[in-house]
Length: 342
Ligand SMILES: NC(=O)c1ccc[n+]([C@@H]2O[C@H](COP(=O)([O-])OP(=O)(O)OC[C@H]3O[C@@H](n4cnc5c(N)ncnc54)[C@H](O)[C@@H]3O)[C@@H](O)[C@H]2O)c1
Image (cartoon, rainbow, N blue to C red; front, side, top):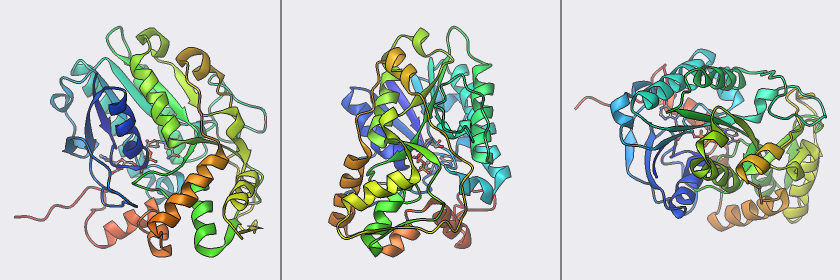
C-alpha cells in the first residue's frame, strides 16, 4: 500500500515508519520538522519527506496514496495550554481539512491518532469506546472534535478510523522525555530519584510505541468495514496502572534509584482505566510490551547513548523545545517555521 504518514519525524512516527516498511508498505512522510534533529543515538532512516505544515496541505499533495496516517499535532496537554488557539488551529481545523483533502484526492483510509485522554476523569471503572467523552484539556478537546467532524464526511469511498492510544512509552530515536515512563526512567538515570509530582493515584494506561505502530498497521489491512468510522482504544489491560505503580516499576529497573512521591502538584483529575477488548476482537490486535520491559529498554538506551540532563529537559521535552524555537526566531507566533529570505 502507498501510505502517507504525517508527523513521521516525531516520537511515534519515527518508530512507525520502519514497522510499516517491514509490513511491505511504501511510506512517504509529511512533517514541518519541529523535532527532526532531536535525535538520541543512531539517526532514523527517514522516508521521502514532504517538508510542509499541515495547514498548507492541498489535495494534490495527497493524490496517489491509498491511506493517510495522521500523527502530526501539537502533542500533549502542556502544549495545548501554552497556546489553546493554535492547538485548535493545528490539531482540529487543519486535521479536518487534511481529511477533506484526502477524501477529494481519492485516499480510501484515514487513520487518525486520537488519545485515551478523551475520557478525561472517568474514575476507576474501565471505559470502552462507547463511554461518554469528557475531555479536560484543549488537547483532548481538539481530538474529540476531529473524531466528530471527520466521521461526518465518511462515505463508501472514504473510511476514517480513530485510534485512541493510551499514553505511549518506549525508546524512539526521536525521543520524548515528557511522557510518564520515559520521564521517570530518565529522571532516575540522571538523579537516582523516581520523582512523582502528583499524589500518584491517577490511573494512566500505557502502551509501547511499537505496539501503537502495529495497531496502525492492522488498520491498513483489515477489511474497510472493520474500521469504517470506528474508534478503538489501543493498549492493554495489563498496562492500566496508577502513576505510583508505574514509578515502582522504574525503581525496580534502575539500580539504586529511590521513589519520591512529593504530591506537590496535588491530585491530577485526568484519570481513566480503559477497556481494550474491541481492538482485540475487531482488529486482531494485541499489545505485547509490558511496562517492566519498556523501563528496561529505556534504561539500556539512555545509558548506552549517554543521555544528559540538558538534552532530557530541553531537546527531548516538547514544550521546552518549541519555546526555544520561538525564542530564537525559528518559529513565528503561529508556530510556523520561519524561512530566511534568500
Ligand atoms: N505519545 C503519546 O503518548 C500519544 C498518545 C496518544 C496520542 N498521541 C498522538 O499521536 C500523535 C503523535 O504523537 P507523538 O508523541 O509522536 O508527538 P511528537 O510531538 O513527537 O510528533 C508530532 C510531529 O508532528 C509534527 N507537526 C506538528 N505540528 C505540525 C504542523 N502544523 N504541520 C506539520 N507537522 C507538524 C512535528 O514536527 C512532529 O514531528 C499526535 O497526534 C498525538 O496527539 C500520542
